[in-house]
Amino acid sequence: MTHLRQVYGAQARFRSTRSSVLVIVLVTLLFTSVVLVAFIEQASSDLLVEARVAAAKRLRLEAYSALEVTLATLQDFSKAGNGLHHPAEGWGDPLGFAGWTPREGCTAEVTLEDESGKIPLARADRATLLNVFKAWQLSQVDAERLADALLVWMRPDYVPASGTLSDYGQAAIPYDPPGRSLRSFSELAAIDVARDVFYDTQGRPNDLWRRFADTFSLFDYAQLNLNAVTPDGLAALGFSDPTQQLRVDDYLAGTGTYAGQGPQWFKSAADAGSVLGGGALPATVGTQISALRVNITLREGRSEFRLSAVVAPAGGATTVPAKATSASPAASDSKTAPPTAAPAAPATPAAKLNYPFTLLEITENAEMPPASPVPPPA
Image (cartoon, rainbow, N blue to C red; front, side, top):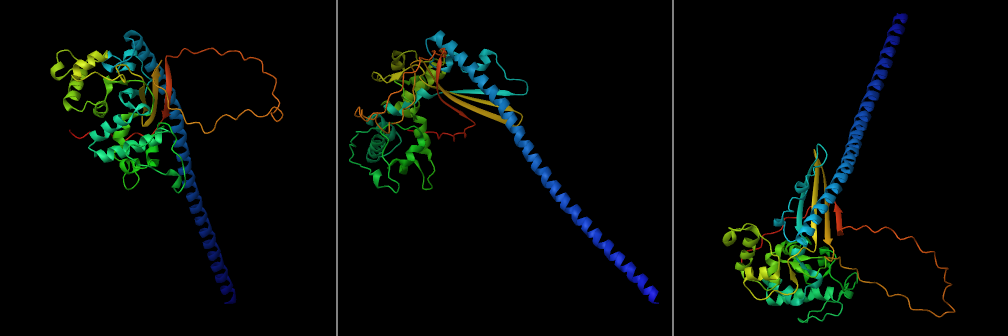
């Protein structure tokens, strides 16, 4: 009997040991499976990121190639037509005109926006701003306060006619107006009065903010191109009659009373004056492009690369310079002046690249701007 107990006890201990080993093996397998699945997921994510980076590099090369082809085409038309005026001249599809296509599997799309169809904010005076804001149905008082607030920000010695003064030095973080035109529309959030007009209660840009960005340009140029002017741009020039904008649109598109002649473009101020039917055009109005925004989108499967560049022809637009923060140090006494180093040998002059355009701005994969609101009917 004792022997049987010993045998049964040994079998029970064996079964217990075997069960424990089996549990350990199952736990090990479970842990290994979890780790393996996590590794596979991480490896898949890493491979996806690497694949997207590699695709972006390939598309980037194609995008810059498309940009060069576009600019070469524009330069050809500029030489033939003594400048660029309007896409009706034939350069609306520069890649198609040049017969250029990206490599197999890719598609390229180019859109062109005449930046000089907007009012250059750097040259906008009080009367111009008031014309625009009153066209937005702002009251006379609100239009004056907003115009003065913007000019105080942009002009170092401007005295507001409305008597509206802002003490930026009393802000939670004191600052001074820069005394130059806006370099970014986000600056509107820092300008008294303007922030209440152009932002909602949540601090987000509203429709008037977008309308302001569609009407004014951050670049500086001498003349607005009437071939791309917006209704608000015409209002800024003092042409507030809706029929004038309609005649301009019909003339450019070749519709309405101009349907028989097809799409046209203004070649001179005299042409524009005959269509507008108003008084003489100001000297700030021209008929040539001073700044052109080139938007290029390359696609390959589900991958996409966007390139946007603002270019200016010779003598065209320039960027707004930043205000100098300090003057050059005055000449000090010769006894305390540091010793001057020996003059360096003259450097070999670099070869000058005769590039037909100046790149004013270039961005890659920037956030797409929101859709512009349709101006309300007058």
